[in-house]
Image (cartoon, rainbow, N blue to C red):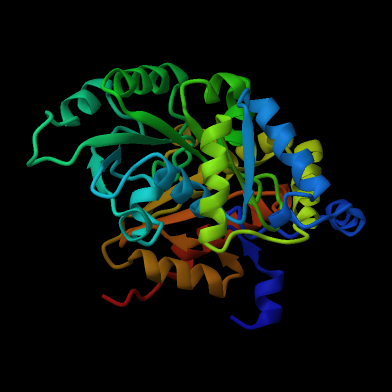
Length: 356
């Protein structure tokens, strides 16, 4: 796809592809900055304090990415040789390049879940007896909303019960809340209730809130102090990063309530795709801004569907050999959704040649 074609395409690959709005660009340009490695950037402090207060946590640390936030959380709450329990489809297990093993020397123990949710009993069963042959379980990582489950919201009661089960066995508990803002918008349950069961929480600004860069790690003061040192060690200490924090603050002020529009548009897209022969999509399963589409025509596969849609000006992503993912976001309006639906419908008319 040429640069001009890419610019005009309807880009549903991820909610990370958003571009700063004019208001956000103005906030970036006007930001008061310092040197955050010296801990004297006032806009960074404003962001960290504000989000920590929103989440009911003592402290926060601005980090370049959600992956870094998750990996720092693992690092500061474990020792090499420990075991980390998590759900099999989780981002930390599937999409962070083996960081937990490489950076922290821990063993990941994936557990089977249902739409991203773990049964507390399965967590209890996975905690091994104290024996020199077995790695000690130190940390449970949960995810909400759940990416590979199609943006599913893990129910608060389930999160609480699972966290309590882990904590009862001496584990700390981390939440990958990259899209926690979406769970808040979809349910009306405020952030402090989602955050309360967890020792550490990571949230992204560069997805639904539309900031170009940035996530935050939240926790108690001692944990975040350790996290700050690890961030520096990983190369995540930034200088005049207040410009980035200003974009995040703008997103908090202007882009949280509008997440409901993304959810509505995702359900509309799912309804349009559900009528396309050769594809399967359940609108009832769309709880937030992620739509998963299964390729049912045996002559097609996920890569071929993605390529065919790209030629029609609709960009989506493969999410498995026969699964395609579409994500609504700040840059996608109602007209774009209808045009995307037309692109999917066109597949049934034209057909595609899959590289089988």
